[in-house]
Image 1 (cartoon, rainbow, N blue to C red):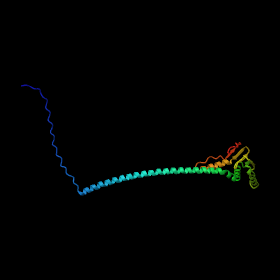
Image 2 (cartoon, rainbow, N blue to C red):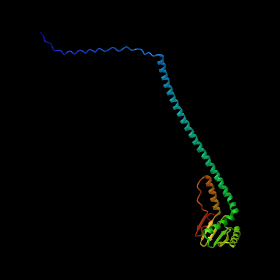
Image 3 (cartoon, one colour):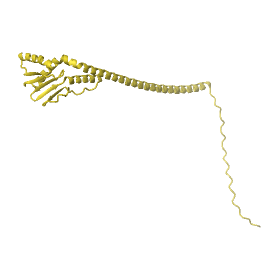
Length: 227
């Protein structure tokens, strides 16, 4: 007997699949007319709700866009109106300033005597009530003011001694009050410029410049200041 080489062990046979249960038979879906109507109505209501929400969202977006355009337009009109008003105020202020400067000299001459007399009385009463004072005015006013002061001195009440001196170098509205080494001076031209600047500032709604009309010194200032 011939012995042969041993062969490998044969593979195990695959396990037999377990028998599966058959799928249950599929029954057809059957709806009654009432069920179909109810389903269709539900779908229609949902579609209507979604359409209404989309319409409201679109209208809200359009409203916001329109409001934004209106606000931008109103702001643009407001800026334009403010620019026009500012331009008109500047033109009116410039015209008013030129008119005051042009008429100022005539106004000073017309009211010069009363204004100078009132200023002299105020300065003397407030600053130099008991000291002899020299008042320097234009020659046209010297005699008139001296006569008025003398008439007041002859009446009741104490009147400070005042000497009125004429100075042909003064312009309309100019006034100089001298007491010892001190002097108070007012320039009519400066008053007109300040009045014009104040009116111009009021029209422009700007703050008025600082006043420079009256100056009190212990020494004699330069004559060309404010001329």
